[in-house]
Image (cartoon, rainbow, N blue to C red; front, side, top):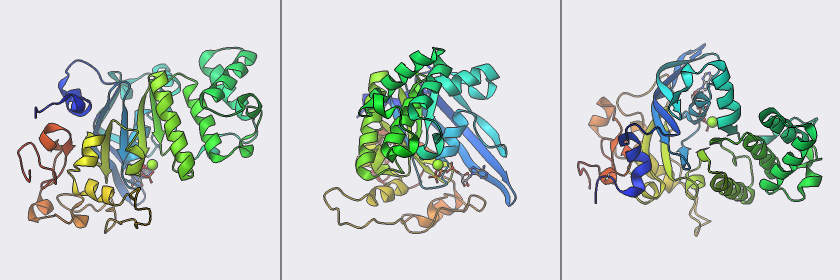
Length: 349
Ligand SMILES: Nc1ncnc2c1ncn2[C@@H]1O[C@H](COP(=O)(O)OP(=O)(O)OP(=O)(O)O)[C@@H](O)[C@H]1O
Ligand SMILES: [Mg+2]
């Protein structure tokens, strides 16, 4: 097998295709927060890249740095945050260096975001049609009447039944799934190149979850967007993402094309996450919990930060912090001294 097969292009070729800017490129990003109990390093050298038209899944437990990564892309980090080093580029343009007008274009135009809780993002005192129309007016500068017509079209686009009538509903009159569709309509009203979806279906029932994910997949294709899909649930990215980056305690510990990651997880943490997925055919099967807890970011263990919970840890894991390096004959990267599926060097192959 060649070192770079076509299927791995998203991960490996992104770094080798010099000169051609990825739509999103986060490089070696280190973000710290000042807190009363000391400095928290939430991101410790995060690198991800996303090609046009593709979906990248960011997966990890609570507190691993997924949302901080998303907020960094739009420079929306809290006031106590400090970017220690690294860069975020959208279309090759450094977000940190953007003047205010460029930043406004980025936030309201080229990159859109949707969050977990649609209820908190919608204003309870206005109809949903009005709220979509306002977003349209802001971005497209059309008349109120035209904006309303386009808002109804957008509600149709996100498959809200009887859109004309529903446009006149207030948020509390809609179900969670319908509200999330409204949020998607608002996000799409600016015609984004990149949609950042941070746990977009976590608050929804499983069946509704699947419908919203299917809608996002369809819209992504029809509108030619790229998507950053953030979730703590590896099951969610299985059918949606082209590639997956596994986050653990502020680091990416594994990055691979989705199919490869599911077929041959290289990092013991990825394998544990996979093992904890309920199998479709064994619905009765219990969730397998990963023993131990995520380490406190202020008191990380020496060496590998996953070693306390790792069934394969050896002496070296306590002394040497593993760097990301090629895994599985080059399809993907893993930060582990003893990866499961073998590395380029053929360890454990
Ligand atoms: N404003 C802040 N001040 C201090 N610490 C923060 C702040 N925002 C985030 N953090 C810390 O940064 C780390 C990463 O948080 P982040 O929100 O990115 O996690 P996450 O992976 O999105 O988790 P979840 O699945 O719960 O959404 C956490 O330890 C969190 O406590
Ligand atoms: Mg989060």
